[in-house]
Length: 412
Image 1 (cartoon, rainbow, N blue to C red):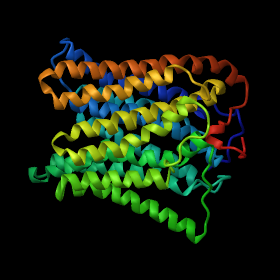
Image 2 (cartoon, rainbow, N blue to C red; image 1 turned 30 degrees about the horizontal axis):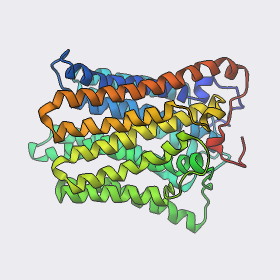
Image 3 (cartoon, helix red, strand yellow; image 1 turned 45 degrees about the horizontal axis):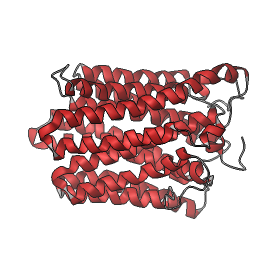
């Protein structure tokens, strides 16, 4: 592994991949949601639920996750930025997955996704385990490789369940849930261990040590990841409600103990409050699933929209505003933040009514899709000009070290 690059020695997009990946994620979200609006309005006759799920998670959410990780990990460990091939795969694979899923080439789409996951694991291990790293990552960063390992296991199980004896179809269902839920849940705990306390209260987690307490802490995180993975087998083989309850409890415990979500924000800014609020939707959604398993999709969409989507967009906004020098906007009260929150959280209501009041299926589906598209469109209209305006300045100046990622008192 070569030594870390000096500031400015790599291209701007390699130093700050969020500039490319996060806007791409919004465009893929539109692809995954837009066809539902067309279906609700009668312009198309296909209701493509599998395409929707794959593109939303493996396109939209994964682009935001990689944009955050590929920007943050090299800065936190003080290693070199994303290689050209790593950035190329992170950009091309989500688009290829969406195209393959649109053509209903499911095996091809998941093969591409496996390549993307493998490249992300390589990216993490080359930096987190490098002897050239000047800083060690926090103990909770174990959740990042665990997230991609859960997803790789899910892709494998889904493929085996679809090709082996029909009696083993449950393996396909377990694998599919591990990809669509397990990977994102583990990413939330990994990113939340740094982003949530740091962005809301300015509290940076300490670097990992070599002592027995740090080793035990890492083992505890590994045990939590194993429990999260096991919840999908419990759901399929033992009890649907027990599996969902276990998953929700793992997330609630992780958010309280790892991300310290029980402490409210102390730093100013409406977006920080949204970063703190969104994760609560994750265990809340699973609680609703347990309380009313007959309408479990209502609870899942509380988790998916209120937790996954809102948290990704809020953290992405914080990263963009910090790196582009818009600190007053980040710490202020821009009207776009509450409007976006109302649109996205509001989309949960008509999406829930799709299952609770199916007599007006098209109306509720169209309303939910329209609100989600409006919320993400507002996000892009708010932040894309700031990304573009900062390019000229950033090309001639050393790359900024985001205070929200480095933390108070740490090296900039």
